[in-house]
Image (cartoon, rainbow, N blue to C red; front, side, top):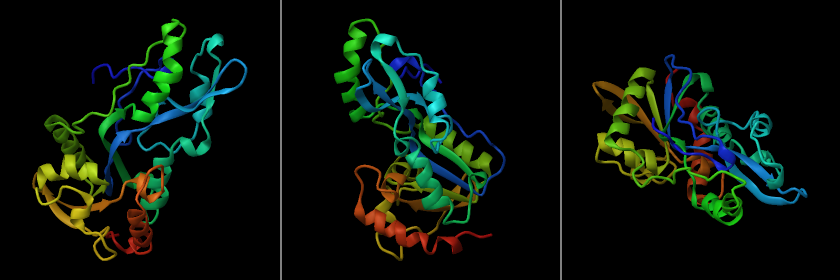
Length: 261
């Protein structure tokens, strides 16, 4: 993959892919990769930015371990202050939500799951763009810090080429189940294979229909699709929906009997 840009303080954005490529029971498709977040302190120890994305997460759906070590390796000119790992809840929240809210209720561990994102690299969201423009860019203009070239979230989350790549991964994983996290994987991947589904609510919005299995054929292989709310919803991470939170909470009570053992 071509140059994906650089984070604040210069770390390159890395494309992520599944490391353990042995056969898995489930294939999990998310939206885009997250990042390691740091607290930026000025030379006097005052907080400049509470959580700034400064490096690619070490693996897909990272759970936050090792953040201190990752951040400590990033070089910061003395005049610009220093970095420390952001508060624990700000590194790896989606990975922790995936484990506690989806895999564990299903009776699975990471060893059972092949993980993938529509966009396999970290993107800069509007909140991060605002922090960079207001707090970081002045240091760039002084030629003390390097420019930030992280890409924004693309308007098209999966091109036809990317859909083909994901399909190849699904088949390579030999997974029996395809877990889709929220609207975007349904819109940008599943709808390319079956036009009847374009968003999570198309599968139902009540206790009887949420989190149920649906058969689909991918290049001759029958796979059970399990559409669920995104970790942001199921763990109330930032702006989220109370409806999907409650539906998922009730789903966890019956999830253990859902998959064939």
